[in-house]
Structure formats: C-alpha cells, structure tokens
Length: 280
Image (tube, rainbow, N blue to C red; front, side, top):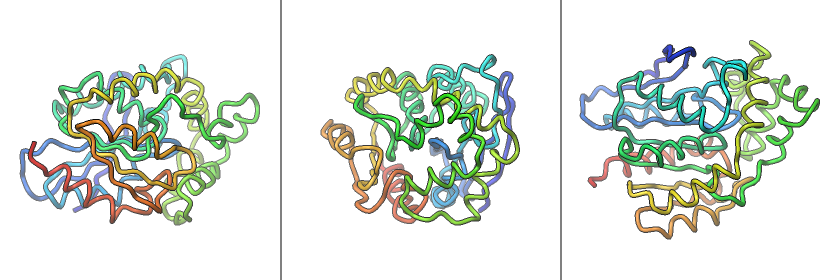
C-alpha cells in the first residue's frame, strides 16, 4: 500500500492531500485526518497505512495556507474559523464524500470540530488527539510570537520555526527526513510564513472554544479522545472533563505530548482502528 499525493481545485484554490486506499473493497466510511499548526498532512503518514490494512480509505489534506495547498492572500481568504470551515466543507464535497469519520489534532484542527458540530449528520465517528477544547486554552508562546508585529514577520520566514515548534511540542527529536518535508513550504515561498501569520491572527480562539465547550457536551456521535498527558500546551483536565459525558471515551498516553502521532503512531493506530470498526 502506498500513500498517493494529489491536488484538487476547489473553487478558486488548489488543495493538496494525501490518500491511502486499502486492497479490500468495503463500504466503510472514509477517514479524514486534519493536522494542526505548523504541521501538514504528512504528520499522518505513519498512521494512514495502518488504517488501510483494515479496509479504510484515509484522506489527509493540507489546510489552505499550510503544506502544499494554496496560500491565498488575506484579501482573497479570511483565514478565520468560518472561512476554514466553509473551505473544508467545499473540499469534502469536491471528493463526493457524504459520510465520514473525522480525526483531528492540534491548533487549527479545532476548526474540524466546529465543522463536525455544524454538520453532525455527515460524521460517522470522531477521534480527537490533543486539540484545544476549552475557553481556558491559550496560544503557546512559540505560536503566539507568529502574530506579533515585526518579530512575527521574521520568525515565520525562518524554516527552523518548524523544528522548534514540532520538537518543542512533542518533546522528542524528529528525524531530519521528516523535518525536511515540514520545512519545504517555508523554503519554497514566503507565502507560507504570511499565511501562518494570517491564520494565527484570525484564529478567534476564545469564540471557537466557547462553541466547542457547549457543542461537544451534546454531540451524539461516538467520540474517542486519545490524549498525550505530557502535553506542555494543553491541559489533560479539559479532555477528562469532556470524557465524563456519555458518548465520549478517553484513552491516556502518559508519555506523549502535543503531537502524539509523530512518535506514538504504533500505539495510536490500533486504538483508532478498534474504535472505527465498532458497531454502533
């Protein structure tokens, strides 16, 4: 099984995405995996093949402004949660997908949760890995700097911001081979840095978290939280509080931090597969 790299034009913008399809022809809903900041769809490259082994079609897009997807000027794309949510819906519709399971991880991937709440009829199952969930969440300093005047302009043009953020959040060294992929958009064009600034400045974290706090408590679809308990930026108490609700299950990864899929894929993938294969 190989992961195929694809692009698709959706409205005015090109989306880049990775797709893996197993050999087994099944009627299982596909799985869409959304990355956080400053990552890209490549973060799911160790997990996607393990999903396809059990007959799942796995699709991981680069958000607009990230990875190899288009990086629109802020005059053409607002970079707000509302704009991202609408764009995500358009991307999913362009693939003729009407029902799917959703996996999210990280800052910005919270937009995926907002999409799920607003379009719950399209969601089969939901999996959350270390994603902002509460109004108490604050942007970690490494990310907050990106939106500061002057200093943000300099930091976001430095490809090493990827190294500092991904390794700082995960707490482990990431191989040069993987970092090369994450750095590539920043080496290719200054638009990657400008898009990152626009995303951070328009994240509307407080308003978005208020929607998630109230909505996820009432979300009726089966939900699994896989949480790295050593996350330096997000409190495990938010995941624990949410898991007290009837339809939500929590699995703890004691040694994992903010980007658990980077170093714990062999532990995470079977948990995801078992959850996705359950009968409702």
